[in-house]
Length: 469
Ligand SMILES: [Ca+2]
Image: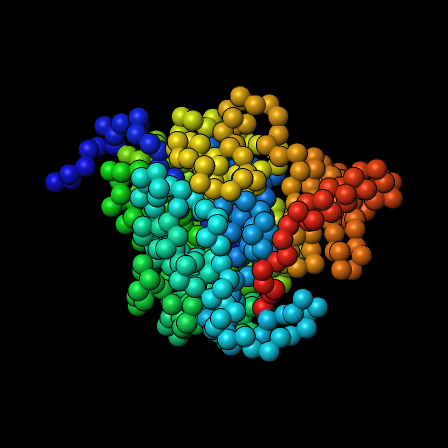
């Protein structure tokens, strides 16, 4: 006998649940909802169809760790010196870091990497929701520091099943004939980055290493389903940062075969097969919410952490650039949100929003106080989605990562490479591909945005660490 009440009997008056699903390195043009003609991502697309699809949604950095630090705190990560990756590879201590002048420092050992993370002065959504009585879980990729004070079970998450590094092997049996595997770019050239399950790539449940034999995306999917099942009778927040479609490109052949007739290029077919596997994993989570009767009272958010690297078969169309730079391809994200009965379905929202808005939005929706947090840069989006506020959530947004910066205000985008004295102005309405520099023809806007950026940049502390070679 099922001890739980049937779906229709679950009261809607309880505090809502939150499920935040994050893709890793997925481009704007990778979903059918955002124009892909290569693959039908019906499950992920359904989030936007049943809620809102943002056309102008942004992450806070075109790189994993800093983007996640902004997302999880609702604050520009540069405000706490968090500009760069906390780690790269299974054994970051074996790799040199860059000095501020761009040279290579001698090996720093463990100490350099154990100090990197979101400082204790910042609150993330796990900490805020846990303090408010929610059950909090994170399943997937953490990549926000592996020193003890930065680990998820010490930072607001009751339950964590994660790897701490930037990626992990999807399938440990690399000779499995049922698995399609392909190396696609420089990311794959380092043997200690994607193609291993050692070191920071190991899977840990609440800090303890667990051996995983399943295909990793499916293992995390099942852990997410189990978390929802176990917490169906109490309010929960589930942060589900998936290990896809980032390398290693390993995907069960059944997905690859489904695209055999439609995609002739092997790397593109393999990548889109992984998008299909990812879509089905999201579909399983959505179905679990329906079958447990929680769907009506759960806020579901889907977004990617940064664009696809231009060296890979992902699509940032119609934009140029990608991961590592601040052209739109690096920072404009597929971003959708649904909340049955509270967000009007079928909306397409075209004003700027940011992953910074996720924390304040879900906190407001759930009645969770953000008083313990520092001043948030994100805003509660619900009034804008419910026509209570006809204005724009953000007048201006800023980006800064290792020599690549940007500002967007309205249709205007200022693209900056300060070290190279590059400054260009684009009209994103007329020129989403950022090809025509209008700095000369619109000097007033150009100078104003440069001044706004300089003012924002001057308000930031120095970055707390540099990048990793
Ligand atoms: Ca990423």
